[in-house]
Image (cartoon, rainbow, N blue to C red; front, side):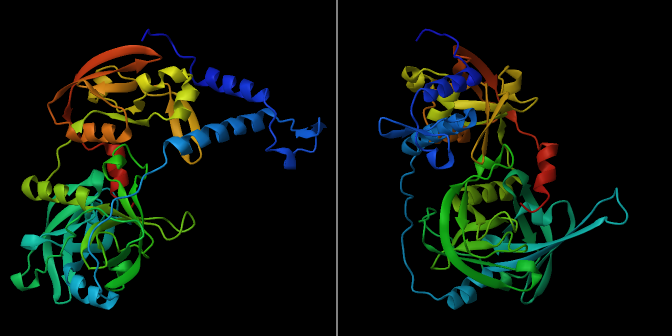
Length: 418
């Protein structure tokens, strides 16, 4: 394909607006008293703002057709166990976690106590959320028999995971059972067990109401697509398990939505993300990840239209749209650039103008799943070759990946309940 510059987001949007201006549009008539009848049909006279809204609706319809989600794969097994039985059996593997952090730069508010829940694993380890024990000088794990002094074995702030080692006897180790199949079914029964508000161990019931939910908080958020549930949770449930109808863990609760922003929305880290991190924290005390420094999203028909890419070139130029590049990262050193044109699409903000990556080490990045799979396969020290398009023209670079540090701006967010 011969390279040529695309019109860009502003020109493309003006072209969409110009096309719609030539088409009779009846959707706004109920709110447009100036509409007139011509030949028995009524034609709306639309403002520029209405025409732009029509463009949004038109492209939105295209997205709905192209990105309609397929069915979520189901987990197997069904148990006739009551919530009371699950609370009695699985509840033995849920503990209360209490920590105290001291800020040496303050006096009046230098003590920061935190409370949450934890899940007992094999060999006496406990997993909880990082924000429950962030910067803690003292950590105590409580069971019905009493408290135990606890050591923090390892932390992974980006995924909000911490592994603890309480100093307790063997009789208090009741590891939780995990679901054999880590996949879940939307609509399946789900329970949360934990210590909401520190009031005591509690259970709440609901369903799995969603899967693969990425909350765009930081550039690392995509690493943990959450399981969504409508089971009631409160502060203190953090670090407790989300279990299925058999009482087997399918995730670890990590976040709820603040009152006023949403209702019946809780999020859990799925086993497919949680367990590999736990194993690495037990072995090394930390998680090592490559620092590519890129953040963005896969191109959609809407993005292609806004960039002004001719429709006949979509298949060849579709790929990962770079929105931001972290300073000092491999992408930054390779000269990759993020976007500069902000566009809000419903609740989603898009930055247009960055490169579109189509190939990594010769492999075609032709879907979001392909992009995620490729990034998960990257390793520290690896050299990768990147190809794509910059303002419509082909480009190619080679980068060597260093280990990603803890970013100060992110770390401040991770210290607090998310």
